[in-house]
Image 1: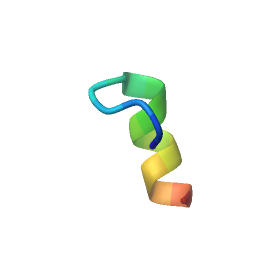
Image 2: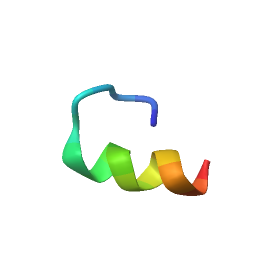
Image 3: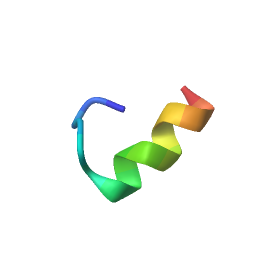
Length: 16
């Protein structure tokens, strides 16, 4: 994700 350490961003890492 764009923001490291953010919970919602962790989900984005799986998608992107």
